[in-house]
Image (cartoon, rainbow, N blue to C red; front, side, top):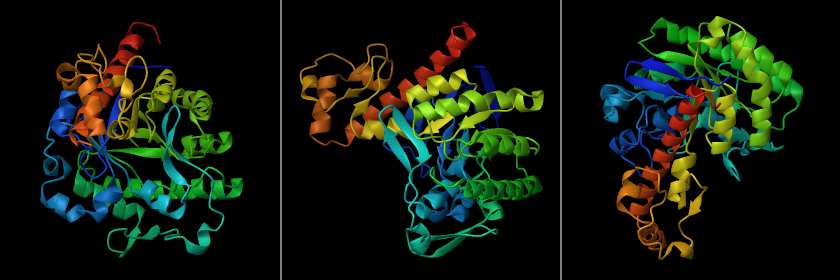
Length: 377
C-alpha cells in the first residue's frame, strides 16, 4: 500500500510521503522559513484559529495573502479550519499529547461537566466561542472559515468539522460525525463558489468505530473533495492508531477516484506513526513534534533521541548531533557547545536544535520514499 508521488500546487511541489512542518501563527518557532527551505521543507501547515484572532484575515489579505505575508512565495501552504483549537476549548482533554513514542493529536477523557462551563457553544449553524486574546465572541461557521481561508490563500484548505473527545458514547459520536458531514458539505459548497486555485481536503471522522469511519469515508468520497484528511480521535496511542489505519486505509483503494487523491494524517508525525502510516498509504503527516522537541533540548538522530541537557554531552568535543546529518547545525557545531547553550538557556539553542530536527524529519521522509522505490517497503 505504500506509495511515492508528487502533489503539484501553485506554489511548488510536495514529494510524498512527506513531513509537514507546523507554523501555528504563520511562523515556525525558532526558525526562519529560509532555513526550513534549506532543510528540504516543502509543505507548511498554518492554523486558521490563531490567524483569525491575530492578525486577522483582512490583514493577511491586505498583504496579498499568506505566502506574501510570510514571504514564502515558492513554498506550498496548508491551513485548517480552526475547528481543532476551538473544540480544544470545549473539551479540556482534547489536546496534543507528547507520548513516549511521539506526539499524537487525539482526544482524551471527556470532562463530564464541560457542558456546564464550556466556553464553546455548538449549534447547527456553527461554533460560538470567545477569543482568548480579547474575550470577544466569534461565530465560526462552515462558510466563515472558508472565507477566511480564501483570504489566506493557502494551496490546500480544510472544511469545518467537529472533534469530539475519545471517550464519548456512540450515539453522541454518531451525531458528531453526521454534523461534521453537514458542515463539510457546506464548506465545500462555499469553496466551489470561488475555487481560487485552491484544493480542499475533507476530514474523515468516526473515532475508532469501524462502522462510523466506513460511513464517513463512503459519504465524503462521494463529494468532489481534492484529497482526504484523516482526523478526529485516532486512538489512545500509536498502536491503536496503526490498528485503525490497518483496516481503514484499504477503503481508499476501492476505486481509482479515491486511490488517486492525496491522503493526509492530521496532527501526527512521530517516527513510529510515520513508518507505520507510510506502509498503509498515508502521503503526508503534520505535527509540531520535531520543533517542540527541539525547543526542549531533545534532538532526533538515526540512533534514537538525544537529550542535550545531559552532562554526558558536556565534553563531546567535535561530535555532531548525527554524523550522517548535513544540516548547518551538525556541520558547524558539536554536542558540547549545544549542551552549553541549553544549560545557559541561550535562545540560539532553539534555532540550532530546530534546524536539525526539521532536517532529520525531511531526511527520514526521503529515505521512506527511496525505500518504497527500492522495494524495501
